[in-house]
Amino acid sequence: KGQPRCASCHLDLPWLVNVDPTDFATVVEASSLPVLLDCWAAWCGPCRMVAPILEKLAVDYSGRLKVVKLDVDNAPELSARLGVQGIPAFFLYDQGVIVDRLVGAQPEASFRQHIDAVLARNR
Image (cartoon, helix red, strand yellow):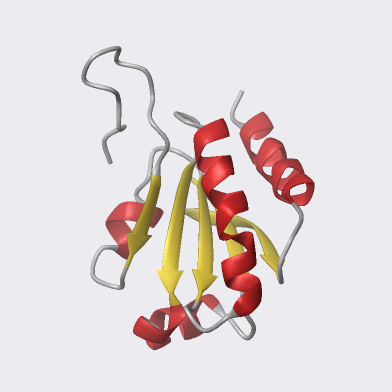
């Protein structure tokens, strides 16, 4: 639940982590920050295509958003519970609740629009 910060300057660091079913509740559902959950698989071309965008978003939204990656091949029950039918699939969580969903590879601007809408709710 903590916030990653630089040990030297104490600035917020990007938060981009992998999750599995054993720590999903703690990392995603109990997060004090909004979460962008990326449901992906290593064999998925569009999933690999958006990975650099997600890394950039994690940096740009440091301290305000947690980007979490869930490998659907390693979490079939959790993927089914989330209703994932195609990948990549993205879920925006706010205070442990899914508030937005996106399916398919998205341009950076689309992610930003959806993230900014969630962040605006918390001001």
